[in-house]
Image 1 (cartoon, helix red, strand yellow):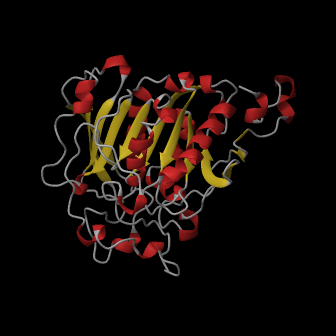
Image 2 (cartoon, one colour; image 1 turned 30 degrees about the vertical axis):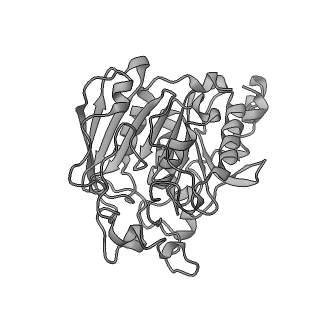
Image 3 (cartoon, rainbow, N blue to C red; image 1 turned 60 degrees about the vertical axis):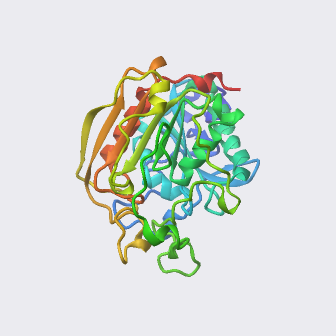
Length: 356
């Protein structure tokens, strides 16, 4: 790993070494623009990030352990927000930034300027991956995961099939962004799927950006957006699906998975119940009058069920996590967030080191 890439001085000058920098960002504790435990301010949620991707000039958030050592092995995560959302909303919807030090995570959270991901963003995402990989040293990335909420999950599903990502991605965590191997039916979002973006996307709204995001992208293709593939990807990687119980129809989560079968996993089994006593950080406060449980209510404690398909080939992980009595936009609670991180880290990595 180049010393210049991490802003590290030689060992003999450790006493005067400048702070570590990756992608031009000096690590801070607590992380910059972090939400408080409740009532995250609107201007904080809509921030674009403190790092700049130099080729496009677009911002992104870049979080990593402040005590990162030269040559240390880390897990790299590219986390994509949902349609109508923002990078800092995603950063708190799935708040793995709170676990970056404990689990040695390097996290890039980008932004789509029109708040919906399209193929025109692919170069920007690739540039971020190249920038971080070059400065870390790809041999120091033990695993690379895509994470995406809603339309960000659909985008993950699309880009992991491209030449750039298919040789790099070790795993995909879909946060209500589609399930490989058979998706559950959708709960009744009602007029939310027909009425377009909420007030949070409109200029002048008193709640503009305060934890809100608009309706779920519909299936792919409309409005010039890329279509979402329906067939299984050709490449191999670990896959974790997380969803709110109320997002699904009455049939609930499918008991089988063709993705698990392709990876020679055993029958699914329930492995854990998670109990969170603290709520998540964010929610869609523009859609609470009237409230729509499938879409998401106010932050509150909760429970989650973890299901795994054991003994998958080559050390891969295939799992489902259902947050009980939760909807689409309620930010993840701390313990379920940590459980998802542990699942990710339990999977075999190594593609990032071989990617070109």
